[in-house]
Image (cartoon, rainbow, N blue to C red; front, side, top):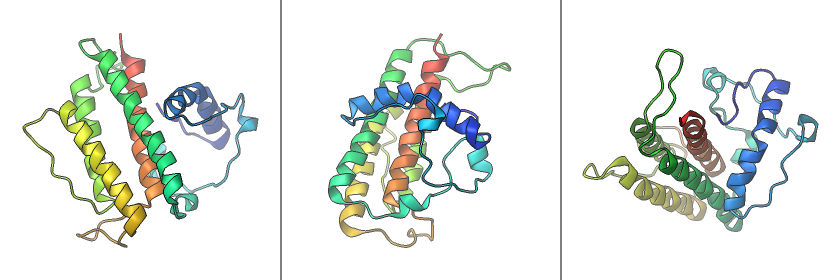
Length: 202
């Protein structure tokens, strides 16, 4: 998974280094230069945060101060290119897994491919609310067909947020995410399940 077994800091950094080549492959698709670290000593920690039950699970649920900084228009283009590369990585993994069996857990657990795609689609829809953006899915379409529309809605929401800013709260009092964190969280979710699929294909 994206950062398997967060554990303590040395363990988390070690796991991150193990996945460096995978990150590099995704970023290459986005045209982003990335020199993968060879060991944990080459990693530079810019912020330390107190985690919660969700971070124990492995998801980046706590918003770092660095993600609350303004995002200039030119930089937004670079960030969205990374996000789109993560989406493409998920699509490639799902395409390779089509018609193939996915390895299950020791007790037979684990979503099948269709359920993974639906889960990712629903997650991206939930994330959109964190930018105070409404998107009505078309239930007549399959999850695979809905994904491009959902992603375009995300890009539209990010562009609107960059140009016009974001409200302090959503229309029903929901929590609003900073743009940087939205992109980080959405990219994580796409890669987490892309690599899950790759690791489970039989």
